[in-house]
Image (cartoon, rainbow, N blue to C red; front, side):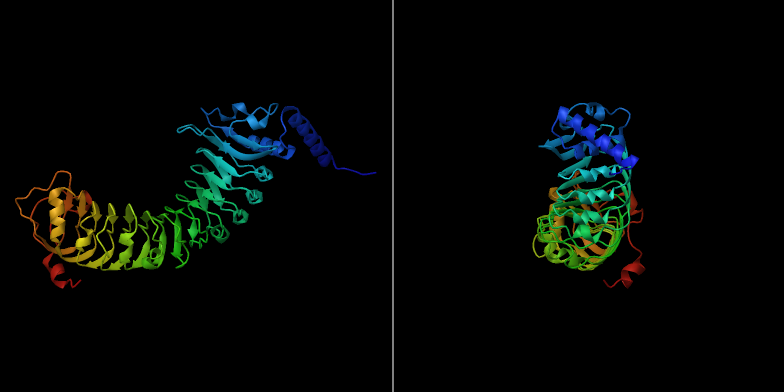
Amino acid sequence: MKHFSTNSCAYGVVLLLSHMIAAAHSMLHPVDFLALQSIRKSLNDLHGSNYFASWDFTSDPCNFAGVYCDGDRVIALNLGDPRAGSPGLTGRVDPAIGKLSALAEFTIVPGRVFGALPHTLSQLKNLRFLAISRNFISGEIPAGLGQLRALQTLDLSFNQLTGSIPFSVGALPSLSNVILCHNRLAGSVPRFTSRALTRLDLKHNDLSGSLSPVGLPPSLQYLSLSWNRITGPVDRILYGLNRLSYVDLSSNRFSGCIPGKVFSFPISNLQLQRNDLSGPVQPVDQVRIPTVDLSFNRLSGGISPLLSTVQNLYLNNNRFTGEVPVSFVERLLSGSIEILYLQHNYLTGIRINPREEIPVSTSLCLQYNCMVLPIQTPCPLKAGRQKTRPTSQCIQWKG
């Protein structure tokens, strides 16, 4: 005669009852039925949210808000009201999520969901889309996510995650979007090997170390690593990424020269400010990028006329020398340049008639250079009050 523990008997009764309820109202697999019950118990609507009103387990769970089924299995679970401004949910992500073996999509709307991500997420072998952003998720990113070979989008942005980005996640073969910005992640950036990766957003973390020369795939179109402590030569990172349309590497510790070919990439916004970049800036052709910010570096040499076609150009707080090219003056007077910040350099002149009027739509700042300012133009408050550099600095500076 077989003997069963009280716990196993109780679980058997629950499973049987759940199966009977499920059979009466839907064809949902009993394992998925029990998993949804556990997930529901660990989460609640925030005040003003009515998301769980439809979650009545005496009816068909496939008709619950945010639950999508294929046959008898749950294939998508979108928790919370997706409308902008809705209050969201609170509570924790229950480990029972790992029981939804057919799940391909799992999202939680912005709210106050807290605690660590359950390691059981690694059991969701069919998961393609995982997005839990703008909540209070803490702890580390489970290394087991590296087992989700089908995963395409990973969005855990705007949480309180700590620890490092698992190297196993970087090795996922199908990743196309990785959005981990605004967390507290540390350590080095792992090598990302997916040839489908188009978006990598790791800004506002505490990442450090240098990137491998082959750490980023050439498929990347959007790259944001700003507000970290990443080091290493910038040319080693950017050289092969010629499909980029947006680049923000600002507020890091990147060094070396900016490769000239970067200015020919199909970029709408090039942000390299507040690093340790040095050397001359030498585009290979006329620059068509609308916004270029190279401020607060150690860039030197003359200003290239090929930059005069940029609408918003920030070259301030560097070590540029010589005269501002005439092509800049022409575009300034025509109103083609909207912002030209050249303050805090070692520039010696700009050939502009003092009687000329700069268009009201244009913002030009020349303060704190080695020249007598030909015209008075409004500068940002942060530029300071001093109009010119001390003569001693200008004499000593050799570029």
